[in-house]
Image: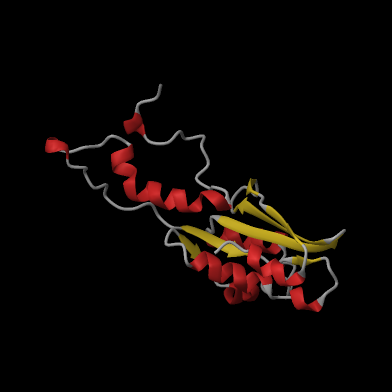
Amino acid sequence: RADPRSGPSPSRSRYLSWSQTENQQERFVDRPKLMGIEAPGGATKALSAAPAPVSVLVADFDNRTGEAIFDDTLEPMFNVALEGASFLNTFSRRQAHALASKLPNPTDKLDEQAARLIAVSEGIDVVLTGSVSRGGRGYRVCVQALDGRTGKSVAAPEASVKTKDEVLRVIPT
């Protein structure tokens, strides 16, 4: 068994699925106690600082429904939802779009490729991409969190809903 004072395993990802983000925040607060670092007399020693916030860029979502209501509406909702987490910093989509227009192959879309290039150049930790599609008896919302440096998927939650009104309800808040 590993020594609890050594911290998390280096191979363990620091990114968690949507359902684990609240637990992650609690672990950051109680990390010294969880790691077994106690001062004389049993008091928990404070670490030098809380972990650095994770920076996130929300890329343009791919609207596969053909319904204009989903054009440029999901991205701002994700940004607002993410801004509520104290351990996340969202990168300005306006600034990202401006940077995308200055890429070697300029674009007015902030698709996955453009967002990843911006993430690498700006040191952004995570890129969120996603899509909304219509199928069968409703809508499917797919989100993928990509490591900003490597492009590897670190989480890929999906949700299916029956009506377009329910699509916004599946955004994590």
